[in-house]
View 1 (cartoon, one colour):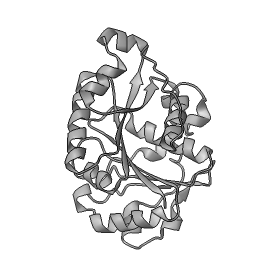
View 2 (spheres, helix red, strand yellow):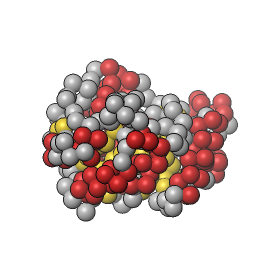
View 3 (tube, one colour):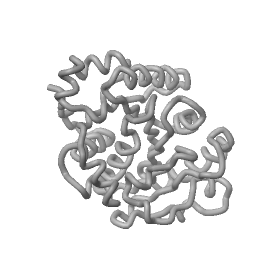
Length: 247
């Protein structure tokens, strides 16, 4: 049976979607069968980060309603073992039938090693929809005070939902920023109240890859791409050191 992983953030602008896409592609490159589900109803962008903006994709709501089968999820043009369901544009997160969504994901478990759910920022209905279904959660934060505070609020909300397998990813961080803020990774972990899964440096290749319509890991093997690969390996239980870009 596959594992459901929700990728969440307390606020927008943390780069949650790029982390989700980078980890998904890394897992696919390693030979795993992966399904990405964009749960950001009305504001979908995961297709861009995956390099699939030109690929026609059905929405997860289409599958929930039985209009299409899960096997019809769009295949990545470079990685046939990576498939994608987009978010619907014609409804709100509150209108999604949670039971139908859960049934769809139960079916996905039988066909995929990993199912990554890219949830909307914040702790509203879309956050809860993805979080409730997840076996584990990746909570993405930036290094700025607002992001860390919101990450803590998101962590508290996850605790109320009974989620215990929650790990922190600190994204878009640089030595210069950390020095100016007088921050260490330990400080961020303490303030967010969560153990660390990974650190992703600020990397202009994330924007370039999206502009060129390809996944980050096809744009470069360094920086944020290498960090996403390390995170993917740790998700598999491999012992991979965290490269601390702050120190």
